[in-house]
Image (cartoon, rainbow, N blue to C red; front, side, top):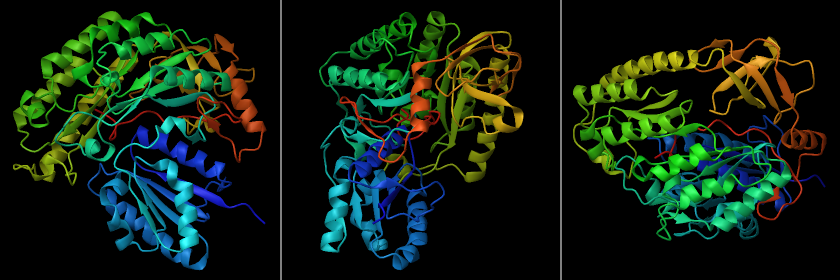
Length: 494
């Protein structure tokens, strides 16, 4: 009898990517194996891990579900599950619109997926189970990580903010922090598996400690990460300017393995718009943080998120955003045109901006940021950097005979392939020779190649059978990962 296969389709933010690794681990623990690449729904179980942030998220989901309906008719026993933020929001609506769906589960009970699938099979009817509060912290569940050398580590879930454009607090609940000891135990287990880079993850990551009233809990956690032997790189996303305190800046600057990189969401440079967004900082406060970070870490690369065309945004408001971008000189900006998000206060605000106005402003902002990104990248030419070799980040690497990876500040670097064997997770020292707006080139010979435990882990993973690979974080089992997607904007970004 052949093994049952599964496919997980992920939409949305880093938290959803993190959750999908858990869903894969749960299914493999239940005896399923991952369907081959390009299966496109030809699996025994297809799971949609959804996002509710975008205005057309439901249309996208139902379109995909519609394409699977005839496939399910032809394949008795095939099951379809829908989880994530849209499932948490729409609940019974999903089964009404797509009665061929077998399981609907929420953001708080992803651990129930295998049980719900079995119950749906036995009872021959859809199972809809949406928990109202967190049943198990995601990182305590089994996982099938996607990287041998880098991993997400969730330190909190939920958010206590009330931004008028964001539906996340309603779907993922109030902030809930993990115990510091559990976080560090998970990181140590990951390092024992070969991981050398971790990204601390939270909807509002630097508010960590609010549960216990310790405003310095996050900086203490960063410093504790600095004491873990074998952990080479520590990153975090996404912080909120309101909670970004001087002790965090000091911890970043003074902890060698905390990388000189910061993703700090701006959203708008206009104080008027920030107030309408219920963002608890203003332009001066934001630029003040940037100034302090650069004083402590002169080579830090700072990225951001910006929303263009928020309801009521005037031309003057937009020009304030442009001014803030010029002052902050971001290495990269994830820019979004405002779209109504059902269930948020902003969706019903007056003075919704016409689409053509939003588009025109968006293009001006993108052009400005492109110019700044290129200028900032040109400053890197001549610098010698250590690049952690990545897997799958350089789409043209085969044709150009190059490899790709990330510098400590998270800039993407394409470099000439060294004569000696180099694996994802290994570290190559190169000199930057050319800059483009979104990447750097190192065209000369490598100055040094350092084979790492992370590279060993990648090698083990590629040499061993993939199916069933997984690790119960905190209690290591067999299995090592592949590359994390670059952090982007999304519902986890504050």
